[in-house]
Amino acid sequence: MDTRLDQETARWLRWDKNPLTLESAKQLIKDGNKEELQKCFGARMEFGTAGLRAAMGTGIARMNDLTIIQTTQGFCRYLEKQFSDLKQRGVVISFDARAHPPSGGNSKRFARLAATTFITQGIPVYLFSGITPTPFVPYTVLHLKLCAGIMITASHNPKQDNGYKVYWDNGAQITSPHDKAISQAIEENLEPWPQAWDDSLINGSPLLHDPSASINESYFEDLKKYCFHRSVNRETKVKFVHTSVHGVGHEFVQSAFKAFGFAPPEAVPEQKNPDPEFPTVKYPNPEEGKGVLTLSFALADKTKAKIILANDPDADRLAVAEKQDSGEWRVFSGNELGALLGWWLFTSWKEKNPDHSALKDLYMLSSTVSSKILRAIALKEGFHFEETLTGFKWMGNRAKQLIDQGKNVLFAFEEAIGYMCCPFVLDKDGVSAAVIIAELASFLATKNLSLSQQLKAIYVEYGYHITKASYFICHDQGTIKKLFENLRNYDGKNNYPKTCGRFEISGIRDLTTGYDDSQPDKKAVLPTSKSSQMITFTFANGGVATMRTSGTEPKIKYYSELCAPPGNSDPEQLKKELNELVSAIEEHFFQPQKYNLQPKAE
Image 1 (cartoon, one colour):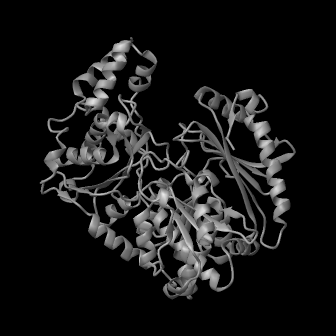
Image 2 (cartoon, helix red, strand yellow):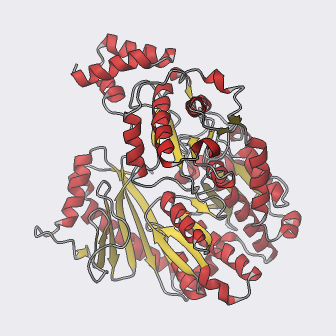
Image 3 (cartoon, rainbow, N blue to C red):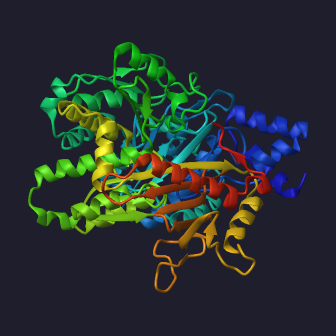
């Protein structure tokens, strides 16, 4: 074994006080299992802007008691440097329902160990006593004016994973260079502090607060401000089915419906209680579409419900399906829901603010790989639209800057079924989005319209926006680099491609290198990142396609969209054109045979 591994495992045996992960490490050493040792001890989990996400188990590459202690010690020292009033203000910590019996790790235990770290340093901790949706953490940071928030969750990842998500005092996720500085601080504070393992000491501590009851109350009070048609909701005949996919969402969505005057939605019984095994789904990710919704379809058919609302396990995302007149279920894409929610929030705002002068301070945001439909609505209606980099950390931070300048941020969304409908949470929130979609559906029903019909009306008024996104799987970083370098040197003379099959390229933006040929100085306006690959191609036919690497998965993703001007264009023709464009991109730019890429499993 190399000395680096020897050092890591020796320290582990000295420091780990969890009998299960300690035993597991001893066993690996005893068996001389080089491959597994390398996986668990070869490199520490990287602390990025999304915090940590990894499988639970033993070693520095995994989520476990010791790595949670080490991470929190580093984070704590960094916060002490950044905030002179940390001991007056404190931090909030919450958790989802994930657990991994083989290693004794679970979200609640991780949250308690993190709380112990802060409390031993004299820092107040607002620790939720039970599971909450992820958006409750950024909500609490703003509501109680705290310095930071930590959410222990792996969102919709496979069941063996867990994560550690961090919010700054502005209520948004951290951005660079905080992540680098926190990483550095973790490395400087690896040895557990004297009381690190004794989480019983927080029980009677005057520094420990449980915000559950008061935050629950104030969140739903704040949410009521976004209810525009309480009387319609009370009377509605539209029936809803809700699934929380074995996660935390059930009781919170029930409360949200109550806050809006609705009867409670029918909950999918097999999935409504938190279960870390996620027994009824292959992946607990509603983005995967129909597979996750099988039980919801069955319950909806039985109860004659027309709309299905599905949260991911930490309830920060939302998928929606609607029964069509044909009897088929239509699952809306994130972009389609973004169009519906953006249209609805603007329409509701306009009713309350007939005076047009307020339009100049009104903003909507979406990420650069999401549909440009909000841009089309903004152009026609006269409010502002801004695009950010991919990920809610960018939208949350930008929204906060705008709000601090006295602007009104009405809505932000990303195609990965994430929506920020209420700016009291500067992150995606699947609880508020669920009840707002329910109110939209109920309101439309009074006009004899379905969500699908309203979506079509939006496209006719503002122009069709047809999108298609998918990915290839690639586990080799070297191959990914080659594929993107080939696009930057397509003709062997350091030029980007000028065509893709029969499609002419009219513009290129490369956010890895900072190049944008639509700008006078050829420099991109959005921030660039050398560590991740991202190129956007604009086509002469009105198409846009972005290829990028994923920060959390071994995927090369693509997002494509065809935007038509307002008026009744032929959506089927547009779909056909987009499908041909996507095939050309797969064939000429991805070259799956050449690079040995696995397509998305259908």
